[in-house]
Structure formats: C-alpha cells, structure tokens
Picture 1 (tube, rainbow, N blue to C red):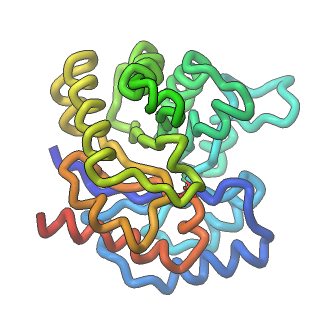
Picture 2: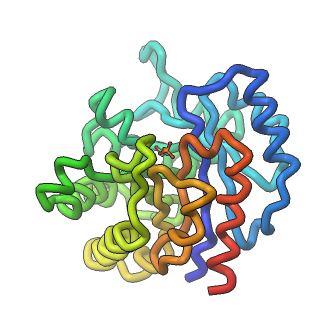
Picture 3: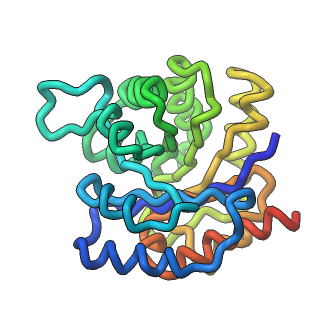
Length: 254
Ligand SMILES: O=C(CO)COP(=O)(O)O
C-alpha cells in the first residue's frame, strides 16, 4: 500500500518574480521530513515555472495549475501537457473548482484533460468537491462520485493520480472542514474507488484534503486515517507551509 503523505501548495494567480523568489528561499531553508515520509509539490503560475524549477530544492517538485485538453496547436492562451513535459515539469493540477466554476470546465472536460496529461507522462492532482448548496441538499457524495467517475471512465492506470477533495465552501473562506467531515468524504471516495475501479487502486491512491488548511488545523486533519495529505492555497504562500509539510510526522507515528 504505502500511501506517502503528499503536500501540495497551489499558489494560484499570485506573485511577482521577487515574491516568488522569497517564497522559494523560505522553502529551501525549511527543515522538513525526508521524501519517504512526505512528497512536496508546489504549483506556481505558468510564467514562474522555469524560475521555481531552477531555484527550488531538489527534494520538492513543481506542478502546473492547468494544461490544455489535448495536443497543442491553434489554441490561443493555452499551454499543452507536452510543453510541461518538455520543461520537465512532473505534475499538473487539473479540475480545480475555480476552473470548474469560473471557466466552466465540465466533469467530462476535466476527465479528458486528466487522461491526456497522464498519457503524456505527467502526474496529476485531480480536484473534486461540492459547493455549500450541494452539501446542504445532501448531494456531496453524488457530486464527488460523478466528478471522480468522469475521470475513472477515461483512466486505467491510477498510479500517477492524486485525488484532491476540496469542498468549495472551504476554499479561501477560513471555514475548514472538520476532521470528521473530511474523513467521511475521503472514506466514501475510497469506497467508491474500491467498488468502481479496484481494491488495489482504492488502497494505493492518495486522497488529499484542500480548503483553508493552516498550520493550526493541519495536524488534526492529518490524523484522520483516509486523509493522505493536503492541497494548500493561501497558507502555501507563507512560511506556515513548512509546518503543514511537517504534519506528515503525525502519519508516521500513527
Ligand atoms: O483551493 C485550494 C487549494 O487548491 C485551497 O485554498 P485555500 O487553502 O486558500 O482555502
């Protein structure tokens, strides 16, 4: 099994080159557990990927925040998976709720992107999660299952996929899911994978939590059996990100 704890930092559309250099310097100086305990991936905006890749410590990796659904060509403003591979960018975040909600990415489109990115050799952090309205109407698991199904329908090999469960109501709101709320959905998602993909994929796929993760709440969340790490937004731009990476120690001693 061996689900290595995974901490991703999604920097979203933030930063100047000076600010990015400062964040990288802070990360480079951080004392964190070794790579067999925690896998760390940071995701700057596209334009800063080469800068971050060249300056970041070698035990941390980089991710793009999106890529085009297929091969490049006449798609103004897009960046293809192949270009990321060409720059040796190993990871890409796909299906973030901001892209689903603001840019209208459907479950099927996200599923197609995940499949294509994997086929080109990228590793994928695939995001799923419900809105507040959907949670309050009791459809959390139906929503998350439909988002995951659109990926499962198109993907056979899950070894390079991390699922990020990010409830939309918890993103950027300071309203973090309780450890019990996170655990409940993560466990349901794992059950869904077991029933619809395979027991092996359910046991080995990392399901990470995102939404207002902070230095203050990360340890308790990390203590949940089906929480295999985090996708961090706001706090990943701050020195506090190092504390969140260290939450991996909770798992080690569990
Ligand atoms: O969207 C997120 C990570 O992808 C979470 O953002 P916050 O940590 O700022 O809530």
